[in-house]
Length: 419
Image (cartoon, rainbow, N blue to C red; front, side, top):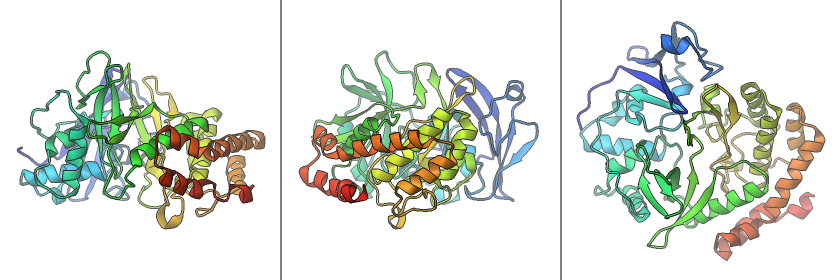
């Protein structure tokens, strides 16, 4: 792989099969930050792709120096972190490239057209020819283990090409999945044959509980019972007996790609610290969607995170989707698992409380978001009922009895006293 320094990129917006040039993104080495300029063709019929910090207008838009190393929040959403960043760094290192000197704009060239959402970046980082043959998911799990044990024989190029710009620490891969035939191919963004849908598969990280795949699937079942909107999920069992969590991608539809923007990117707020609380998330949902039903969805997500002890609820774990007509909605809930959180607290505080938010804190947020007490209490009751039934969902996915009991104690050990 040959690499030449990249000073600017063309950014394209591919919404539900309609692709147009969004603009040009350039890097100022002297200022250590990026500048963006919308394309004239986009300004002729603009959409609010980032309504707070990047309004569609003529002229250069400078990125703030913080918190994204001189990159606009809109484009930072496209950059992988955690697993995806590790793979890119390993791939560049193998090619003799000093990855520590890459600018954010150069990292976006590695995302190219394969990232999450509807944005793509040209030119792309040169890549080897990608193999599109059917793949055994054991290959993915084996490769993850090789990467995590620092072994140099891992197939970094194929892993990195198919991770799709995903965020988070968990190893992920994008696949085309045929449910009827239970087969899959690696998804590099290529057209898929009839019967295949675009899905994401996760493997355990070195820090995860051994049954994390089944655990996340049980959480998804519990969330659906609690009334949350989620993409389709399932456990994929490999020939070697592994059980990997998989979810259908909600940024891809039969019509094409949807634009995805996280709360972190919308607000230029770091997800690595407690930068956004739930009052702000409810206000953001109202401002972006202008729909009280979407605000109530955000409230339901918050209530679930509180009672299901998902404290990893930072600004990148809340997102919004925009369709081809510029209409925004709250994205389906994702990354729902048991999490102790930073310092044992929620990343997003609930009415100022991070460690042990209760009914009064939940109602303080709902009232601030103009949700009636009747609607709020109805949501809370439905969520609590679903969390009460945790053992049922754990049994459905055959989670071990020891882990089921351990989590039940965390989730429901004091449920009677709390009421």
